[in-house]
Every structure is written in structure tokens, then in C-alpha cells.
Image (tube, rainbow, N blue to C red; front, side):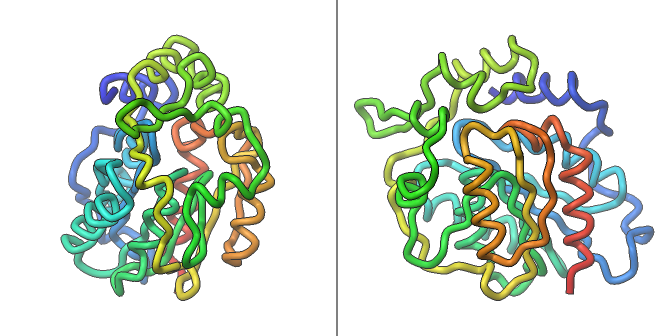
Length: 256
């Protein structure tokens, strides 16, 4: 999975090597220097690599959270562990399922802003399952099925068109066959905190998304009162439109 996502990043964006930033002094005055990126279900943290490379090259301290995807609590714990290692203001960013995670974990006092990218933004007491059921049906959500161990997958035949229509076909198909499952307990667990009530919020809407409906994304962005940016991309916009997504994160780094 990791090699496949890195291949996608290489094909779609010639990024800098991921390394510790050496130019943080050149960041805008007052900007948060730390960026923590939280990935969604069915993929791993390297889905963020194109964005991470852009931000790292500019001098930000970027951390990629490796979600275990075994439960909401486990993913929140992994994110809080990453936040605990930051010094100073931090922008917390989530893609897809990662939006649920940052909603719960984002009450950390170090978090200066939240950025949602094609992401779910639940309110207190809401679960991903409830949001999916209450929102517009999509090709991607209709194709999510459990196995006999309670792990959720997207039908591999549907995955390329529903999740990664603007990635190269061979990479999309390989990702479909190498998914990281989301445990059903994560899918049904409600958040007990909605950090977006107390933070500056930003939202990147993917207008061609067939997993999280664009209409649902606009609803989330509206109710969290987020500053909104639209990109004409699929659910894989964080890879295909990495430059635009990185620009939104940089804007969030200046939020007060």
C-alpha cells in the first residue's frame, strides 16, 4: 500500500524529499510552524505525502499520523500522540474519515486551526455511520461492505471510479486491491467532542467526489463556519490537487 501511494505521488507531483524543515524562520510572522496530517480509511499516511512535501520544503514541521483504523479511540490516541510531540501552534488536518478523528482530537490547546479535506465533520454525539446514512447516497458509500471479521472495505471493482477516478488507472486498481480496512466499531462510534466549535476552521470541497458527496461536504463546511475552497477533484484530491490543499493549510497556519 505504501509503495503504491508513493507511486501515485511521484506520478502526479514532483515533490521534495520528506525531511525535517530547515527554513522555519522564513515562515510568515505568527504562522503555526507545525502541521499534523491525519489520513482517512482504506489508505495509509502516505496519501498525504504530496502535500507534506510541499509544506516541508517551505519550512513547516510536518507530521504524518499513522492511524491503526481499529477504532475511533485508537486513531484519536495516535493523533494525540503526534500532537504531544509538537512545540507551539499546530494546524490539524484530516481527510475523509480523518475528519472524524480531528474533530475528536482537535480540542488540544496546541491546535490553532482545523482543516477538513473532503472530510466528515461530525457534531458531538454523531458517528460516521449516522452521517453516511443521513447524507446523499454515493457510489463509494454504497460499495462499503464488511468482512466476517467486522472490517469494512470498498468493493475493489468500485474503488477506482468512486475514490480515485483522477489517479492513473493502474494505481487506482492496485490501491483498490490493497486496502487498509476500517473496523466497524470506528464506523459506528460517536464523537464525544466537536473541536470545530472552538477553533478556526477551513474546508476543501472536492466537487467531483463520489465517496463523500459534494453536497454533504458543503453542509459540513457551512455548519462549522469554515472558510471554503473548492477543487475539481475526486476523493483523492489531497494527491491530485496537493498544491491547492497545501495552500489552504498555509492559510490556516495564519489563523488567529
